[in-house]
Image (cartoon, rainbow, N blue to C red; front, side, top):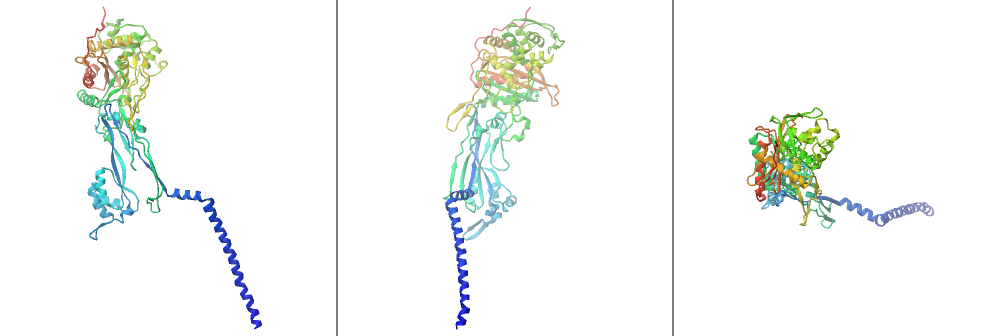
Length: 597
């Protein structure tokens, strides 16, 4: 027995030892776990909690509502309407099932397509193809009306998801399309951005500021109702109030298109500006773009050519030379000149008039009335090149007007030091310099406004969502010539319409001042093979209210502004004066003599 007991003792001791070792290891492991638990819950708890929350948070941007564009009287020219894009979750729609009286009457994407196709106006087979797959969101329709979305909602099809968006519409079609512009949407999703005109120039103001929604999602992508939910509302944009008068713009466009057709003109541009404020009442380009369908118009004709296309002003630019001569004291309206058909300057540059009328004895007023190039060159010879340049820039040539539209050109006016032997004389009668239709109007606005140049503007200001209005900030008025010089020029310009080349611009009951012009223009290759015929005028001349610039590119019936542009000026101005309720003129003008003996 003793022997048996001795042999058992070692066997009993080994399990005890193992148990102790296991206990020690287990205790060590528990200590590690406990330490880790303390680290996680005590030291790193906040950090890890934030990381876990961040992994569940989703932030989406909420587009702001694009504001309207309206005319000076509040007529809506551009607005946004509510629309929906519709998408399908292909994984969820596979689970779609509809029962009636405990009978399955529709299930899966094919039946869903059969239900939705008539509502969306799509072919069932094409829609079904969009329904099948493993995408969680795929567009099946865009820009549908709220009424159509309600019909879809009523079908209660699992997996069909809406995406609120908007559609930009232009109730007046192509009326002021060149000014209003249009928007372009993203092919990959919602959102519209300005692509031309006011829509582009005032993109930030119209769009406002986007908002955002932050929410906590679960494992399946669903929103956790009790989770984090933060929302920053979008700030609506501000309505852009234009200076345009929709009715004057509409009638002017109608008259321009009729004149283009009648004269065979390739294109025409007309501006109507308020002399006293610089506000643009109409800004018209023939063949204006319809913002509802901009693709139907050639890309180079979708903007405002009235502010982007440049050309030599021709004889309408002579009024600047007359202004400089009067202001500098080198001539008076009655100064006498002999104007031959051809005239050669001391540097052997020869200039001629449009018609050979022999040598004419003309006053300064007569040189302007009969649009004599040779007389104008003689007058300008008394002005230094630097002085000629000073007045061209003072009247606004060579720099954009900052009217409030994109792609505006400042024209072309080289520094006087770079003028060659011919250009220094050509600029005196509107050649060797290029301008826009609006810049030509700006010259006559300055003269009609007593010699004070105003910054022209197409935008009155911004109407904010809270109802307040912020006028557009404009440059300070600039005096270019004295009131006396401006008054003398206005009488000389009245002579043009009474006894000169601008007789076709006369308006019954109103005194009219203005100037005709004919100049060469570049063709597609850059060669001067085309003609610009123009007329720029002011009415009423005795109490100026509007200045109208008419530019016609390559007319076929006549090359002379007095024959093709002046009649259009008359028609446009007559309507504008009536629309603005401008009273007729009072006493007749006492005009200057145009010839001498």
